[in-house]
Length: 112
Image (cartoon, rainbow, N blue to C red):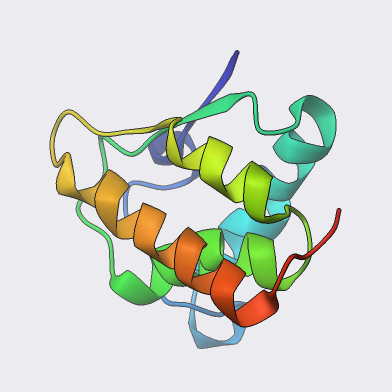
């Protein structure tokens, strides 16, 4: 299983969109998550530790955006929920799970 460490992208996660500033959730999704999913499917682990915090907009765009942009479907979103880890703040995994599942409700059953 491939592990993605957000801190290797940045220690300071930024805003939702690239146009709003550096290290955005959109940029993380497009440059890190999407290529990893195309290569390994949802058999990836996402390690959230080692940063100076996350804005909800960064997390929602990075993860909810995977569903809205049809990178993953509902079943893949549910699988990805099981591979998000944080020892520093375990509640982050639950927050991301809610963004993934909420996006599936809005997008229906997106296909890859």
